[in-house]
Image (cartoon, rainbow, N blue to C red; front, side):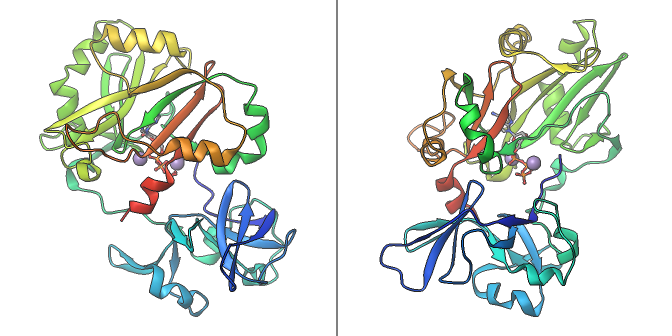
Length: 335
Ligand code: ATP
Ligand code: MN
Ligand code: MN
């Protein structure tokens, strides 16, 4: 599902910030953000822009220039990042609904296009791009995870479930499939042509993935995170590149393998899963506590260096619930 970056919301709460006279902290779903004092009241409607929103250069947004001006390729704009003000985490931006100029909006609908707001995407190295053979095939599902802050309404219900927790790796999504005898390699959104300089294909060949999948004699896909040199700054300090798997998909049944089956399957192919941190996890009483838990040192930290992990991916044992909890410490360090 495409991310809803900008939508009308109801402000759930407003609280003072200790020692601050001019600002206060608003709660919107599971998000907290700093606002000017008295600009909004609890129950007000406003337009909420999530982190990673890239706002166009327009008079109304000039107040963002100092904190957020950024170029994305040739395009100028204002990029919303996680910030800390007076010790308070602030994620996103609330704008008055008057900006929608009388448009009859619905709470929660995506209004990014109306405001010319797009998603900020960091530049991608050529080796992770590649030549498209086609779009991502429809016989399987794309990788994605919703942010827990957008599921806060379900948090209490989630507390009844048992989850498994994996470390979220900061790399690039890759899918390998074998379908009707055809082996393919996909990046996040594309089915890729095999070329000598494409990182996803290189890893496929180095790890002999086509041979491994072909030996099974069925239609199957495995999905993981490509990490290493040239990928997202290679915080893990790896030499070369490798892939850690988080999904196996049965194409004929059109469904993911359950956890036990998945683990056994990846092991049987002599491949590695993402780090599994807990197999019997229940959620803490509050979302705030869960966000604190997401901060931590990556299992993949190189010798003698503590790398801040990106966060966690948490899934119910039956896999029906799945979400990501990105570490705020990680986000605060993000460029
Ligand atoms: P957003 O939509 O929030 O802007 P995004 O969807 O582009 O971001 P991510 O924030 O990286 O990407 O979150 C989803 C991705 O996380 C998945 O597509 C997958 O590639 C990656 N990922 C890394 N580690 C894991 C893991 N342990 N379990 C599941 N997915 C993982
Ligand atoms: Mn996403
Ligand atoms: Mn990612």
